[in-house]
Length: 507
Image 1 (spheres, rainbow, N blue to C red):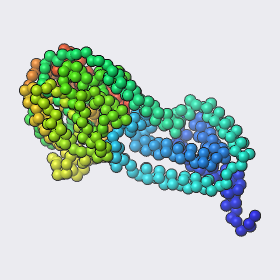
Image 2 (cartoon, rainbow, N blue to C red; image 1 turned 180 degrees about the vertical axis):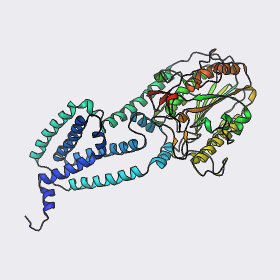
Image 3 (cartoon, one colour; image 1 turned 90 degrees about the vertical axis):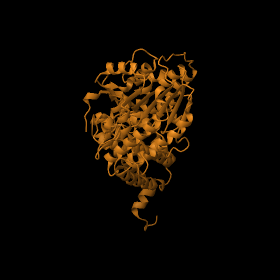
Image 4 (tube, helix red, strand yellow; image 1 turned 135 degrees about the vertical axis):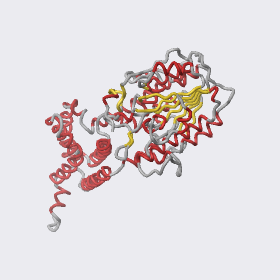
């Protein structure tokens, strides 16, 4: 042995204890983000799980360096997700967060990254860099001996038996719970594919629309808070077109603060208490097709069949689909760019129903309207949001102007609302806030009989837009009962988390 060789290097390179010390340190380092979880709930079982995972990784390192490295990097990826979700949203309802990520277009994802990736993620990169250095040290150690591998394999089996005996507790412990939530979210999205097959194979029975509108237009806004609309009394003139139109407008609450749940609730017979009905019922689009309408879905969000997501599944029921960014998911255009395609699609001699899904006031607000357009300078969050509402109003004006008012049924509703202040903004919070549910519901037609009847039924009360499809069926004459929902039950992030709207706080 070379007496000049450093003792530390001799230990790390040749001694089992040297290998053990590096494996121990790197394994504890890997599970450091979960120490706060260990300190909560049932301390004894959580400490036992933490130690068992660390021990299992140590024995894996004695079996194979590369086995250890691959497993370590896999957990590191889960750690990255854990840190991000815990800091920004909290771990409650993580499954729904994964579902949202899987259902988002790349343009939404890129904007999300730009807004929400910050200091916590930068600190995590430093943590990951230190851990990867430890992996490098492990790879520099010599391969384990055959005897070491056999003994370690036996010990690893015993450790996993210990983990299995605590499987109930392990299932609630990150990273295991996060991995389980990821697979559950994927399973939920696969159910949408099954629904698509059911809708495709079902032969719809012919329907009759007694009101016989030549054109039906349903505009679905995004993240529109009615409190920021002059139509609803806001002091800034953010909705001059709607103000002049003088439509019926209702004090509406959205059934969910998430687009992927809100739109199925708007357009199918699913409800807050029975979201599962979405998976085996057609939407208003199919009902109008059965009534003889040529149906269109035009969107400035996502693309066709994207991850077989909820909204794409509804859109697929239309005769024609048009997505403004079908081949460019990384950039979203302005909603006004849909007007040219809409104008070309209108055929005066046909019965047509248009469902137009806007980008509306989705974060990032400054990206929702062209440069130079606005009610006021976009100097802060609130002014930029108001400008996005003002731009949406101009788009609604452009859509309305394409049609003959005498033969038109026009509706505008937002999927959900938005929290809007210079200190807190967005949607999808848990627990939710009332602003996430306070949406516009606007109806207009020259024919007034059913409109007046609907208004008398609603009076001055709230409408839950889970009944929007039934209201439209009534206005078109598909049904003779409007089926208005006055329920204050809403989903907070997930269908499994139903709360009373009135119990939610306001900012």
